[in-house]
Image (cartoon, rainbow over all chains, first blue to last red; front, top):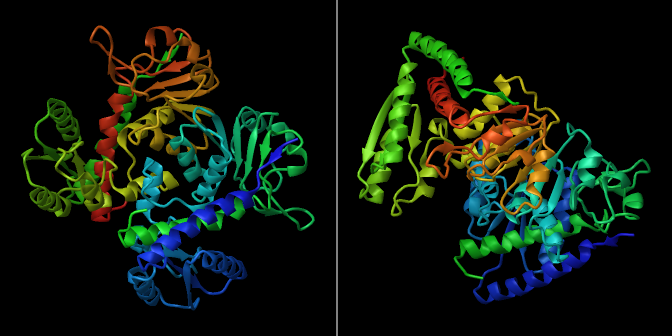
Amino acid sequence: MSVVIKGADVAAAVKKELQEETQKLALHGIVPGLGIVRVGAKPDDLAYERSAVKKLGEIGIRCQVFELSENISQQDFFNEFEKINTNPDIHGILLFRPLPRHLDEETVKNMINPLKDVDCMSPVNIAKIFSGDDTGFSPCTPEAVMEILDRSGIDLQGKRTVVIGRSMVVGKPLSMLLLKKNATVTICHTKTKDLAKTCADAEVLIAAAGKAKMVTADFVTEKSIVIDVGINVDENGKLCGDVDFESVSLKAAYITPVPGGVGTVTSWVLARHVVRASRYLNKVDK
Amino acid sequence: MSVVIKGADVAAAVKKELQEETQKLALHGIVPGLGIVRVGAKPDDLAYERSAVKKLGEIGIRCQVFELSENISQQDFFNEFEKINTNPDIHGILLFRPLPRHLDEETVKNMINPLKDVDCMSPVNIAKIFSGDDTGFSPCTPEAVMEILDRSGIDLQGKRTVVIGRSMVVGKPLSMLLLKKNATVTICHTKTKDLAKTCADAEVLIAAAGKAKMVTADFVTEKSIVIDVGINVDENGKLCGDVDFESVSLKAAYITPVPGGVGTVTSWVLARHVVRASRYLNKVDK
């Protein structure tokens, strides 16, 4: 029977630290500001936005939403983006992607001030994660995974760690963060042979494949620490992870649930990035 | 007894292809040009430079050496670099690093035109390797490894591949190139426990640890394909790799020697980058 690692506990701890930080920043007259740039009004984006505005607001981060028409011209979009990019009250920028097809995402990635790039789209921040330089911003989800491992007292040094998935949003940056903690990292994917065996050989298994309940009991041992990054919908329309919680939680040593696991921590990592960006841009030490 | 994969054969094949390419480019009036920027005159840099100028010259690449005083001021250095960066006859730039301490390497990395960055120091090219975008330039040594595997007919799809070493010059970018070929990649390093066992479990083992003869016969099986990226000096002052060739070559299926392996191919990868850069910058298709 697994110990269930609750995202809420980790989230609460991060939130408390950030609250103290924003109070200190207030003494300097600084209110951390996040600019949320949304082109169009997709329901998923709106839901995420509402939740982020609410959560970040609770700890004194001011969110400003910039809604742009989905028919905006490329030039107008760049002009609007540049205004936000240079606005001194905006310390972090979250741009919902993918952009509509007629807007060039590559140009925006190179345009964003790397110091405001709290969601890691600039090549400068991507190159920093890759090279193990922690002065940049990593994508929020992989950092949430690291936060959970760290706050659960799991030392990664020398540990056999398997990541399923090689996306730029989770798998690859997460592998680099794990390497930086001196884990031995194996990156698996759809073309991996003997996936179950490779996973069962891991001390820490992180599922970021985007495939409902694909990690079954034969992927783990009694010693496995299992972190589930997946957010899927199962055959009954219920939210579920990449891990078959029912069977795996009977066997592994530790497991994170979905919902209530990694996803719960992600917005607090975003909040931390905004707070950090506001310190950087105002040249205030921690 | 291993089949020894000879770097010279791979090098000869790449050289022949490039020769045909430069002949075609000549019809467009284009002579690919490499600018070699050297601050000071370290013997190692000079040796590499002489060899590169000679080899690249053989296939019609014009190398121009810019020797700068090791006492050059930061501003003068940036001015000189910018001249080379915008010189239309220079398509690729090779800057010997590390620079003297008083010169800021970070600024140059961000300054170099990514299209001329044939040795992969720009964050733009680093981010591209990380994200699997092959329109950029990778560092030459990892690409030489891929060239050897490819020209030896070794299909990496789904193969258990272990890389020893996590540097930004070899280990990490190589892992990304292997992933792009659908290998299952494990990155090992000094903190890895049970290194020999992990390596023996690999179908393809690539040693880039920088430690003389550390890979011994117990790291391999009769089926192992062993690529040795190390360049070290052994206890008798003789050049050797990270692999103990004497014992490993009696057991593994394939092995590359040192010298005469990966290192032999590296300058031809640099040459290919310069040729490609000259095509990009002149907007000529292959």
